[in-house]
Image: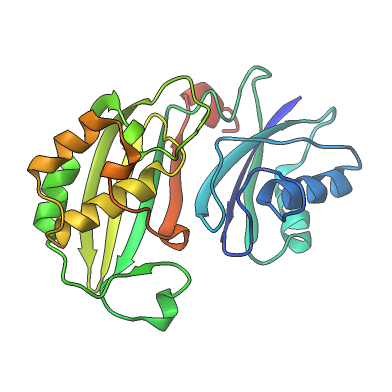
Length: 250
């Protein structure tokens, strides 16, 4: 039987979500807990991979288990066992062919910037001490929307079949001294959101002009785009699935 698990985590102490040797990861911690409580070797497949230090308010993964799982009880037991920076919200049965990664139709991230030094946002936002022109940053963001090649914003030497993504929305909003950039697409390349944010901050500081955005995209050259902003300000906040998957648990 196939199950989806919905969970969230604060990424500060994790070396990313995907399991790797000699480093603590979200996948390793969650798999170990599931395997212990279900008394079976559980392997999870997540909806995507987040880099070291990146957070997820919403993440899904799937795993297979031979017996019926009582969701409420298992979530309670898992959360009692898991560390405080990793929490499970639900576990639900899905069709056997459902796939957490390949069936995801859209992903949404937020990036948090603070323009005022704030000790309560130190681990969750990027402090920019220079004034930012939000209107210009939003105008630049609209020029990225659409299906196009985003190689200029991709981590170098990434093994992908295509750099094309369908970027569906990208907008900055202001909440007092905190700026929130919300971006949605069918898929994201490694480091893509952080590189886009770095480029848009350059626009807001007057270092990059609006007319340069198209040239940066056309160049397919990572060195033409802005520097990647720190991982601590990035949050995966939403993943959309077909109704037959996400609504299968009622």
